[in-house]
Image (tube, rainbow, N blue to C red; front, side, top):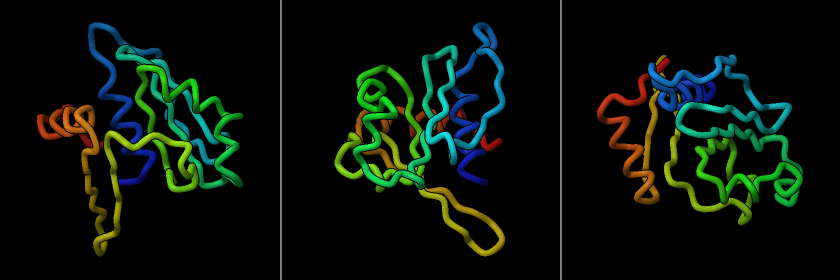
Length: 127
């Protein structure tokens, strides 16, 4: 499982059969730094901060507005955001385990615990 597949799984979890989201392929934000996705359950923003030269660049991306919205924000390389990012609701760590990959999920808030409950209940399936 790759970071992009995990992001795609979270995006799929935000759609419903009754209210489908406009289909758009999930793209890596490696060069764009941010990819927005409208979904049936609200907006999702996927950020990849690996190429961020300075945490202050987050202001130019509009992260201040995103943080205040009821949106799901997926962030790769969050440590590059320094203190300008809020504490995560949910942390997903991917690691190599021989030929396989493992995922470790940890909740950092009530919202994160609810997301973990959805994962445990089968709300998010690997893609």
